[in-house]
Image (cartoon, rainbow, N blue to C red; front, side):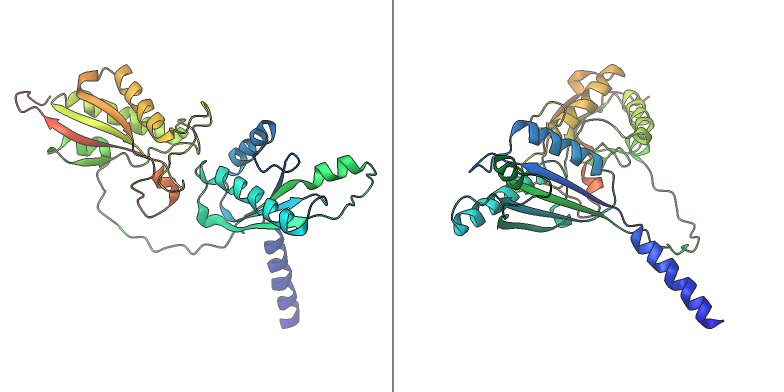
Length: 287
C-alpha cells in the first residue's frame, strides 16, 4: 500500500515539474555585426511583450557566430551579440535579476539538418538564442486570516491633511510593461484620484513617472513611440487624463524620474506614478 502511495506521489511530482513553461527566441545578425537589424529588433520586442506578464524564473542569452573568422574573434563577437540583446531587455523593463546567463559561445560548426546551402547555414548560425523559463507553479499555503486596519488609498489621502513636500504614491495604478497603457484594474483607481483632485482645488502638484529595471538610471523605451522616455510618457498620460477630468493645467506639471528611485520590492511596483505636493493655497476653501 505504501509503495502505491509512493508511486502516485512520484508521478504527481513528475507531472508537476514538466508543467513548467519554457519559451525560446532566436535573433539573427549580419556578418561581422552585433547591431540588431531593425526587423529582428521588432521580432524581439514582440517576444518581450509576450513574456511581460509571465512569472519568469530565468532568462538565458547565448550568442553565436558562423564558422568564418578566428576563434578569438568569434568568441568576442558572439559575446557582443549577447550583450546587445541584454541591453534591449534592460531598456524594456525586464529586470536584470532575472537574467541568469549572458554568454558568447563563439562559432557554430557548419551543419544544419536538411540544409545544404552554406550561405543559409552561416546566416542561421549568426544568432543569439534566448531561453525564458517560467516559474513552476507551487502549492501555496493558505495564510491565516488577519484583520488589518484598511490602509488609505491615494484618493483618500488627497482629501486629508496635505502639506508642501508630501508625496502620494498612486498605488495599484499599474502600467503594461513598456507602455503607457493602464492595466484594466487600474482605470477605476485613476478615476477616483482625479475626482479627489478636482475637489481639492487648493492643491498644486508635480506628477512624477517612474520605470523599473533599466540600466544605470536610464529611462525605458516607450514601445509605442520608440522613444526612450517612458517615465515621462507615463506622467504625461496621467496629466492629460487629469486635464480631461477638469483639473486646471496651472495646478500641475509632469516629469519623468526614470529609474532613479526604485522602491526595492516587486519591479511591477516601480512602474508607477506619484505626485509631489508643491503648493497649498490656504486662501482657497476646501470643497
